Amino acid sequence: MTINEKQDEIIEEFDLFDDQLDKTQYIIDLGKKLPPMPESARTDENRIMGCQSKVWVDAELKDNRLYFYGDSEPTAQISKGLVGLLIRVLSGEKPEDVANADLYFIPRVGMGNLITSLRAGGLASMIERMKAYGRTYANQTA
Amino acid sequence: MQSAPVTTLDIQQIRQDFPILDQQVNGRPLVYFDNAATNQKPRPVIDALTQYYEGYNANIHRGIHHLAEQATAAFEASRRAIQQFLNARHWEEIIFTYGTTDGINLVAQTYGRRFLGEGDEIIISTMEHHSNIVPWQMLCEERGCVLKVIPVDDNGELILEEYEKLLSARTKFVSCVHVSNSLGTINPVKTIIDMAHQVGAVVLIDGAQASSHIDLDVQALDADFYVFSAHKLYGPTGMGVLYGKKALLDAMPPYRGGGEMIKEVTFAKTTYNEIPYKFEAGTPNIADVIAVKTALEYMAGLGKENIAAHEHELLQYATEQLSELDGLRIIGQAKEKIGVVSWVMDGIHHQDTGVILDQQGIAVRTGHHCTQPLMQRFGIAGTTRASFAVYNTKDEVDRLIVGLRRVQKMML
Image (cartoon, rainbow over the protein chains, first blue to last red):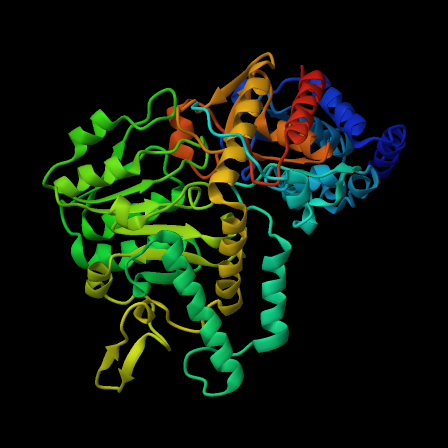
């Protein structure tokens, strides 16, 4: 599935909910399903700064595909869900596709309030980190 | 918590004075519980700002035309109103600043740099806002002073016995918060000031959170400096007050250089203006200064003791209701508190609490509240904080409780 196909799928899923609280619940439940990140990957280097909660993102390149791993401190379930969503969209894709991805699903799923509330919690920082991995690996493999 | 007289205010009527409250957030009526960050503005304050810009906007003091005279008169009338509000002895003791932070920096950078040096000790407390920590750390770094810190007990009260042990002939300055923004604790500032004066130290009180809740009398307190912000007392943002005893202000060097703060400028030498103007370089925040007077009149009209009684009722009710939620722990259980309640919940991050409450139209504050050392003292990363103002109601507290039950249901 391409990045955009995955985004369209997520938009469809969120369309099932009218209420923002139900959407948030869905994000929380996605977070609960995210496989835990090994303790060794929870380094300061992998930490997304500027968050009220602790969030980590790591990546590895296999067969010219970027695979992302992420986690949050256990209580920060919304952040964890958001990391999970981003991983679902961007993981397993080519580095250049990650770097150039237009993440249009974010405004479309009606998480606007979440994005502003998490301004400090840095959804934007998470995206920036993942795209930076994309750019770095795209340059290395080019 | 001590009991307070029951309020006589008509809160529904008062709510009509605050246009911002009449709105839906995320499909639900707004509940605004972030008053310790900034409270909302009543119609007369908003009107005062508009009237200034529509009717008599002009630069003050040296203009000889009608509008300038009108603006100057209103500006200086505000200074007198604040003098009364604080019961300061002299009008010149009221310096306009941009806010509490600005006032503290002014004192640190002028009094501090002139009178504090190598080995001199400055005492602050564990419950200070970063704005009453960092300016002193900067000064210590520059001047070689030593920062000492009054500890806090498990209830969130200052340990005065420990404060006493910190005081010595080396203590030259004490800077302490009147009311904790994170916990709501009202500190015994009169005692703190008296103890400092006994060793000859000068005292600054950070009144940011106190000014709209507690009757102030800087002469009775014998405070050397007292600072607060207008936007936390129903006034505009970007405007604050530094009160200082005349003798101290006279002895201090100016802070910023520029217009207004001078007597005469030549390239050979510049002489400085008298207080308060010595500390008010440049065109001040004229409109906001003028509107502060209206805010003070608004509060006086309601009666500060009535406001305090109403907020105390809300605090008691909220404390009782919150205590009934499983896994919720209130941080800060001082005997004397203003209407601020802070809590943590088992297994739930405060950020998530804030997001989900917001989705239910409820505005609270989450995080460390710019008091990281205090959070470290309690071994937590942050809290969720609700803080009350005169327009809040028990029904809104009920909404908060329902909102928090929803948070727990979603998270646990």
